[in-house]
Length: 444
Image 1 (spheres, one colour):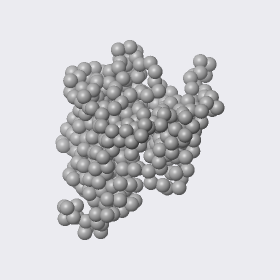
Image 2: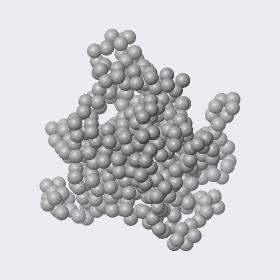
Image 3: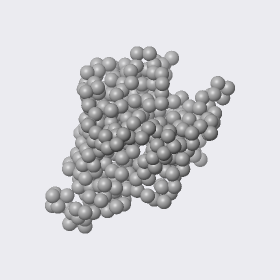
Image 4: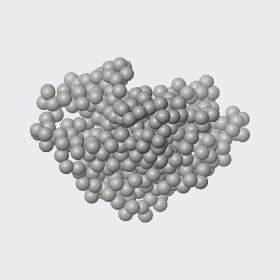
């Protein structure tokens, strides 16, 4: 084992790698509870006609399995200390845009995730992935990341009751005297304090403290003894194989845009995370990522597996930097993290205490972290600022990540051509321009 993971070369040992793997798990354990709540649209009382709610317990199991499998493949095949799990932002797009907004059944949405994963594998194996990534301007990539962050935070404020609907102004400030709203605000404050103090796993600990506070004040039902904490693994039967069974439903213009969105966002998440973690761990060589193909394959394979068992796109997590900060340097760190995700399968009863007020602070904090890419956008170049701004602002305003991407990608070639910078536009961007224009024509 030591020889396979090259412990001596990286100056590490079992204890260091184990602690790093546990640290990474704690930093991203919140996804075990946030993902099922998001995909099951917890807090949304009415669904579109003909659309059913995905089983929350099954999604919990699918989340843990997809995270464990993807992280294990990353550790053993690519040998990187990088963990994977269903991605924040992509799960919100799945639930709030595709299912709630478009009225597409969750089974068909899972089929879209499966299709995006299969395309990702093909693009990775053929080398086309890098071509497509390079075709999309860096500033638009930054805008997509920041826009998703703002969108996720908006959902968090909404589910917390801090932001509510208003017939006159569309939205307004909620009733801050409501106990449940105060609980969510407490969770935000606690999470901010923990992360400001650089406490690893601050988001997860913030959720725990919020849930405990809610139980103490009678806002959340307390677990009933040990059985309310540890229990049987929820069945995958409600979701397993649904993506395959409904694969034939994806061949529409609407689903094409959905699949492209899954694909693009996963592209950006994966590329950014791999480079960031590898840089921190000192694994980059000549500004290149060794075994990049294996790392990308691990990510795409995890998405395919996750879709089959019943969850949205699985991607590499930036929280892996927490484990690297604790000394993790090899794939064994990921093996340990994967083991913790499997162990977590037996803690599904805790889903009952993870209410919308408990998950809302996590959504808001993740939104803050994702919005950091705003600083990398060239705001002083109008032809760049316009499409970037439209991507960012239209995501929350239209309640759709896909719409935000579409509007920004349509305006980009227009502003660049008008500024005389047409030679800088990659031909692929023109193809995307046409696709997204057709998308709006179809919606109308």
